Length: 173
Image (tube, rainbow, N blue to C red; front, side):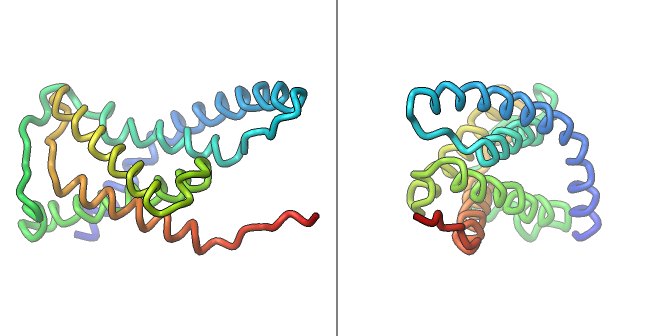
């Protein structure tokens, strides 16, 4: 299983340039928007958090949706835990699904203030997972698997917990 994990995780690096490009565009756009917000006396958006969020979302879309051929997967699997234990390849997929959404939970909570609450982050992670699975089903670029929804949501929760563990700087008044 470990060899599959390392191989698959190294393959993901090919999507980093797309994420970086999205990040540069986001940072530039936010700089322009923040200039207007500051001039109007409004609080600026967090450039770092929002940029990281958009970079991650672009990479996530490439991994889960755009990197697959239309017709590469069809069907719905609503049997819980149907992918675990079959073989090392499927076990690696389960672990990868958790790992895939850990950054989501972290950057979501960082970039979207309401997502700093557990339930909001959980619901956003769940909605994102279901949305991706639905798009994969409709476009036949993957299977709609309840195991994927469960493991991706678990990953988002782990990411949220990690975000909560990071000490935040307090502004001195």
